[in-house]
Image (cartoon, rainbow, N blue to C red; front, side, top):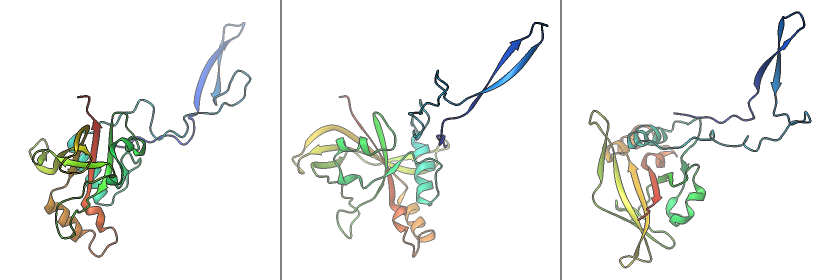
Length: 211
């Protein structure tokens, strides 16, 4: 799925007819180039918009994993980058909305999987003012035909230092490929490549709960 914004305001052709005394009509074509009443061209305040007005980004979990995450891991390009790459844990959650490419009440980022311990699998989720804490076990993401395509983990942000942090209303869902697929990409696509870090990418989707 790709929705591209025009680089400049579109040109629209308008037709009007003129009646003659003999009853015949002729059609004349005029071009609308954002002219004002004085015939001067007006500036388009929206010509730099990234996506079309009215567009809302609400992908399903399957779309997030199979299209956006997998394509990114495979090094494929998108016509429009709707998900921003960010070292998310350098920021507190209330700073993130301004850094997202799109979103009003929910935001998405590609995030490299950081390690808390050099030789361990425990990720580092500590920020300047607090930390993200996982709630419950990982959930498998499946397609309609029940094929396993990824994993989802839900996290809540706590302000302060663990284990005595104060729970906040900021919630985040972490989507990643299964470990065996991550390892396969690292070996097959990125072996001896400077892009090997892409294989461990995740998509993080976060929002602020109303509760």
